[in-house]
Length: 365
Image (cartoon, rainbow, N blue to C red; front, side):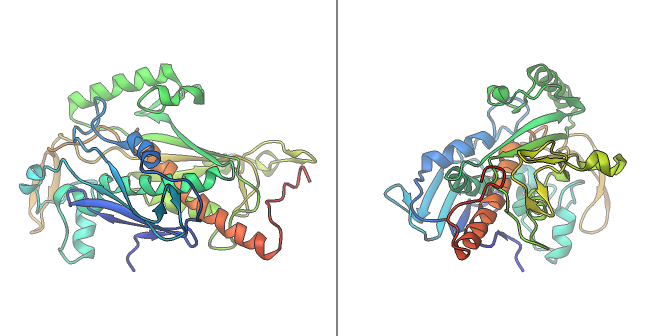
């Protein structure tokens, strides 16, 4: 009952703590014959690497990945792929004086209760955002699987600190460090980050995910619905507090005639369902929005208690981001890719059993 593994056919297990020697992932079930290099994985890791711009943690981690197994002469060989990323810029000094204190908004209290007081207090240990570097590395392997079938996953920031992107120009998201599709909103977001930095506070926001090229038929009834597995994977990220697909919470105020997506002989006429029906992909784009909470490590004084139940006040030092955005953006992409790769392989096995060697396209066949 470890809870550190996700997937059925494409299985990912991650390991490591924030201030430990290293973090990593083992991917089992990746098909053989896919080109894969450390440089390819490194490009994804660069998107979440800390210390690149103001407002992010100044922790200088290279996040250099090493492929230990599962790849030979540049190609996957069908055996488990082990990835390792060493921590090279660890400074645990800021945590020594608060090692017995439960930081508000963190998992200190719940880890203390669950593991009977045995926990790594340095940077939150396994509950730290640092843990997500292994997810991004594994997600890069999943990306290679999806590329073979023309599936693309892209995430971007549509809201930060109450400032919303009015435009969705996906061509500019890699031209700014917040992965924002609206350059005007991006500038305002940067100003907001600077003001909160001076106040010693933090910001939350919303990230939208778009998965394109998804074939119809991915997902398993009833408990392994594609939508359910995507929600679980995304909500397993520590900073995520909410998720919606398609029209999302707007459906609560809609009529059935408004919410239902009409179907023509040429395809669906809109996509309020967000790409799944009955938990199975419909062939449309999968659209997900993710609510990201503010970083809980702030310099502002907060009330809490220690392990002896004594009331204390805390101001958290150390090296922290002002917001989990933008570094959570590639993490969300990674988790969506891992789930899609798993369900893609499951459906391919189903089609092989039916002696159908390709995904059917109902609206073209």
